[in-house]
Image (cartoon, rainbow, N blue to C red):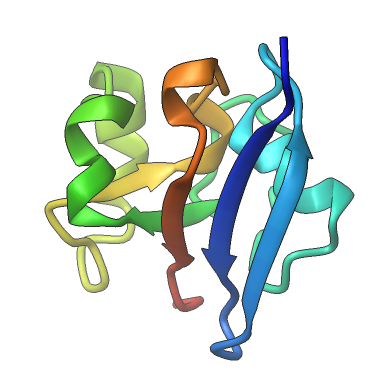
Length: 109
């Protein structure tokens, strides 16, 4: 199985193209491994903060899917900057269907 490629725009507007995502790895883990600015992930992926919040490109929204109720609760904490495509990167597990994923890191509150 090949590596999964994603393109993230960090909080400074820099585009970060990542070509070594592994199936089963979360998008948060991948972003942290590449020091993507704005992915703080204070809780380490436990879905108990919203410091890995990002906006999924609309074209990828269906492939990524919708938040579960726990993630919805966390996203409610960032209501001021939430968008319809908001997700927590710790809750997105990479798989081949996400190869080419595009997302933007949400600003900090």
